[in-house]
Image (tube, rainbow, N blue to C red; front, side):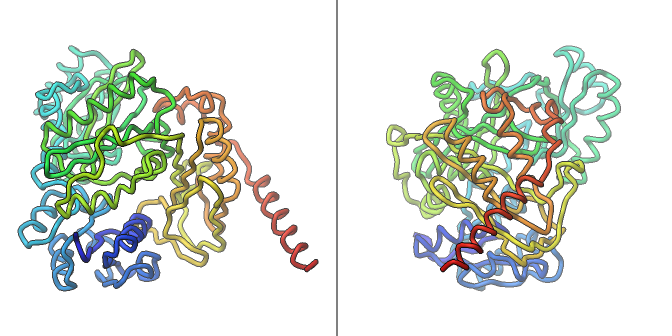
Length: 472
């Protein structure tokens, strides 16, 4: 078993990994840039080391991170998500220097990070893919000819893309011409590669992803699926496990496809296979994420399996503890990404000091975060500051628990997406589990909300608490 792990990340995912390390008796080493010197993951780790003044450079320097892991006596690095988590060079440097990388092999990361190679691998394995280019596009003329053949709308995508970036939907030839250079430019700037490819656009799909675990002994299992259809501009906002939109037969189909995909590439560790689910009930492979996902929490809620613990056990060389028939799901779970953004102002980022923070609790409620009262949210990183997770035995109860937990939560001093999510839970289509990736754009009326009722609710609760205290 691994003894000491450097966590090459920050924020809530670093805190979450530290907690599992503590339960497993493993020492956790945190890293931080100066902007993060007061962050919770720095306070929670067994030891913490500075990466310097630059808010990003240290988190993105694989040699510096591996050297630090060796200097501090670590035998492994957990990359979390984002930053270098899907960087094949980072995994390769770890292997060359004798440090265990808690994730798949660099060859797998490289193959799955290249979307055209991933498509080819899935086609060879018999996993359905969206109709599109066989490889990278060489010119806008090639893109136009292919789009004419498969039909509009189409999606232009960065081959090395991820996180919803480097993607453009094109309704006609004029839009395809205009967007081609834009996507190439975005791909070059964001991912260091100008390669792009084209796919048929699946109109109003549902975004379904499957959590898998695989060890080096040839064992591969799934932990059921998640529905990530509630998103804005290809960025997920709310995730649900299992999907309330799938039948048991559809669930079995997509989970079997995910296991087949993982086996086809010799996958090891935790990963996620993402699919588009169209109106006709067809699943199409979209991509494989070779890391832990932000929304792993809801899979943990319905299965009772600590995915980070399984990652560490697999990286230690141990076989999976579960056979597929031993993995069961129970109830529903929803995760709300609490972002420091103002939804009513085009989701403008809202950074600054948190003057009051109150985390909801009670049965079936979990909050993963790295914020606290008095914490200054730095402007250099992703806007997600907390994840609120609720679980209950049935869909209606899960919705009710979500509403209550969102009402209980308070984050003052900045704008957040909390109240907006409360509006989504009240929408009839969401309650009836009738939604797809276009839900947010089709319901702009949900942005017409007020914070006043919630503030009055908090004020009433505080007044009651003060009165009760005075009466003692």
